[in-house]
Image (cartoon, rainbow, N blue to C red):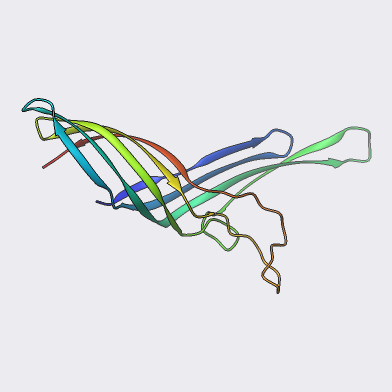
Length: 155
């Protein structure tokens, strides 16, 4: 199947400001699984395998706080809010790949509830590079880690 998912985070750097990131992805899991019938109407299942994700759209919302001197002893606090494309030139990569698993229960062969987890294997952060293709800024490694809870109905 394919899944439209929102994978986001929020960072609060009290004195410096905050960043909220909301990227939307199209997830394509390729999982292999096993289902075991407990009764005629109830079964449990487990599945695992790779997933592929394509970044569709999203935004970084950034609130920057800075202090400016007004000639006196008290600084003026200035807040600046702006947004930018989360998949822009200095944002996240559009492609993600990783491994995932899911466990759950199926009722009456129509309804299911499951719990899953995905481990991203690709560093999602894109940074500016110089002519030697080395990073200008020291950047942390950023990988997607997602816990999912799903309820579904099968047609």
